[in-house]
Amino acid sequence: MAAGDLGVELERVFCRHGRSLFVCALAITRSRELAEDAVQEAFYRLFRMTAVPEDVKAYVYRAVRNAAVDQVTRSPVSGESIEESFFDPGENPQQAAARGEFEERVEEVLRRMSPDERETILQHLYGDLTFREIAELRDVSINTVTSWYRRGIEKLRTELEHEYRRIGNETAQA
Image (cartoon, rainbow, N blue to C red; front, side, top):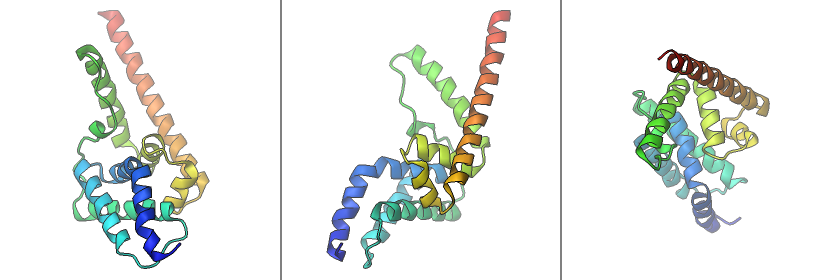
């Protein structure tokens, strides 16, 4: 690929993977604004490159991840809410309330996970990245990524099951 084609390829990657790139950054920054800044900063840097990477998509994901880490370093995470970027609002007030409670519980469990578990879950489920892509992006083995994912999902399942059993018991006693 010629250096002149890099801009076209970057545009194609952004159009095809823009949301996933945002989710990748959001998983790290936990802030909509910082995630947007990270994606923008990464593409600014990428468009100024003269050398063309072998795998442009993987290189873009790595650049966005690095920019997100830089954003967190410059502006430490304040434990902001991340739910609005992932969940859709309900169709009616009752559904919205139920969904809101569920989202709060999921978000709380995500906050308590290790950064590696949280980032892997969000990149896989909401960023549509495969475990192999996450492994390449994070420069770790695919086994490490699957372990982070499995542990995180197990924590999420256990916590939510425990919470719903507690709610069920309270409802039955009322």
